[in-house]
Image (cartoon, rainbow, N blue to C red):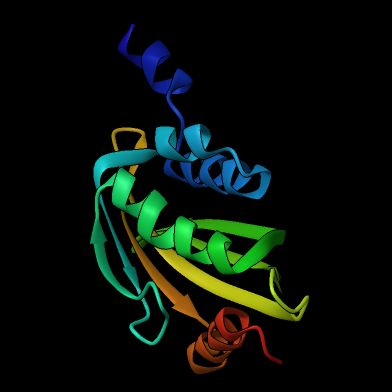
Length: 144
């Protein structure tokens, strides 16, 4: 029976793929289902939602809320690789500012620690955090 249960459980990579799938669909309950209740998310400090955040609700309010408050988020590709350091995800997409329509190409690399079928920790790295922060400042101000 133990072997049967093991085959039914999602691998860490499958958990992260499910998280990305829910994110790409804007499925907040699906996102929450993949995160541990006390998930820790460490975002680049340059961003308006930067810093270390703890908890699913904080993730939704502070990170997703801020991102989607400034722009529409379209994920165009998500690559997931499982390795000894955890599950590495590479997300690419486009942010479109609500106020100006400006588009910003987004590339993020995330390192996920997955335990017991949920993501416990995410370290987020963006390709160009200073440019991304400037995009958010322009979106907030309504300027290009």
